[in-house]
Length: 352
Ligand SMILES: Cc1ncc(COP(=O)(O)O)c(C=O)c1O
Image 1 (cartoon, helix red, strand yellow):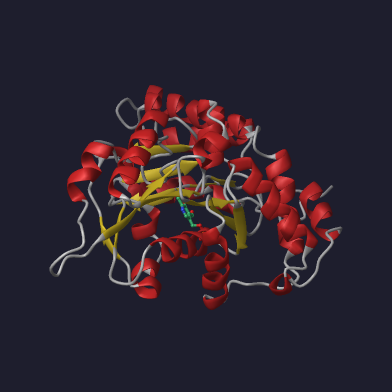
Image 2: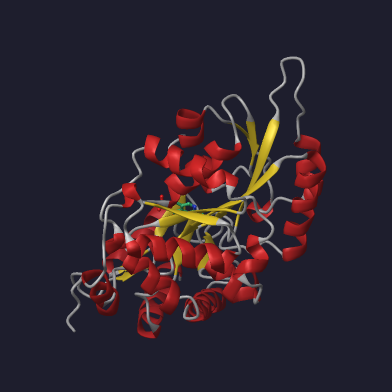
């Protein structure tokens, strides 16, 4: 079938795994989806997707939302009241790229330790926990990001997550996972989705990153009592949709067909990093590439981020300019081996 997503004239787009376009098989599943009014709970495809993903993570319920940003916000509003505090790392998506949603729509205050690769630990978090008292802002939740976007796709080790779970239990606070790319973590480590699920009170997992669906995330609640509250919050935010089974069908197709193939994205990310490190030592460390994200440190390179981005674009390769000397490359469903070769030629050419 022709590229019905629209041919970008052979562009290799490494800016993000959000740029994927639905495959022909996914579009076919969308076209055939049974639909109903989800505000009445009557969309069979959404109901199927919610039940299937909740079961994958061993959670009591899942609620379909349009975006990962809304997924995080719904979960955080369920866990934190106004004027309460959330601890997450300073580079977390929640505080970096969600337009201040937790503060603007939840009245939630954030406390944000700076940590290497975005990975918190119980030792870092424990001294930051505040208890309720005279003028104090009580900590009610901790959020981790698995894998960590600005941390270069870093994976939280299972033991670290277990320690954070024990810490949350000890202090009677809750643990949320921004699991936009938790599928990548599971494929990279062999830890199952249900092992991850058992550790968190709430999760937000995305269908529209490496899994390749055009739209959609799910908010997961380990405890059924939180599910109705999550549906109310979603409705209040305008996230309750009607015949959105057409979107859920893409998500179901993605969950059933696109998880295992993430290993290919990880291999390609490593190949990119190895090629760049060989041509320009010091620009990236291939041993840090655990999943589908490669960070380039241009501190000592002859081009800055703007220069590299411009030079690559001229060769049909798009990369993300994160900071004046920091560039991000992300592999995904729409980048094949030939795309990696072309990207290596463009990036190494600009660096040398
Ligand atoms: C770690 C992480 N969380 C949440 C999101 C938000 O997802 P969305 O763009 O669907 O709102 C993203 C988006 O890239 C992300 O990388």
